[in-house]
Amino acid sequence: MSEISRIDIVMGMEKFDGLRRALSHAHVRGMTVTQVLGCGVEKGTKEYEVDENYTMELLPKTMVSIAVESKRVPELIELIKQELYTGHIGDGKIFVSELSQVVRVRTGDEGVDAL
Image (cartoon, rainbow, N blue to C red; front, top):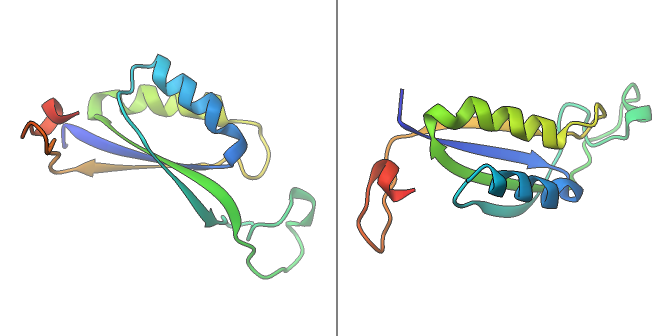
């Protein structure tokens, strides 16, 4: 297992400020935020429209990417789930991937030191 992981969170824009605060309090030292368009298996429909066969509707979303020590991933996933959960369609998705190399350009630091 790699010692550094990336967590990508795709969510509705209205939840961003709360997530940003929660990650900051959890001592996450940096993040990249991107405005994206997308949908899940519900094809972008409202909760009451799920059973109907609509074409895919791309909705505005926010994607937050953070790089962290792999040992922190379970703790941070729980924090993210708590922050985003409403129990309704559109709560978001969390993707975790291993990073083979991280380099801080300014200092040349590598691996965990680059975080």
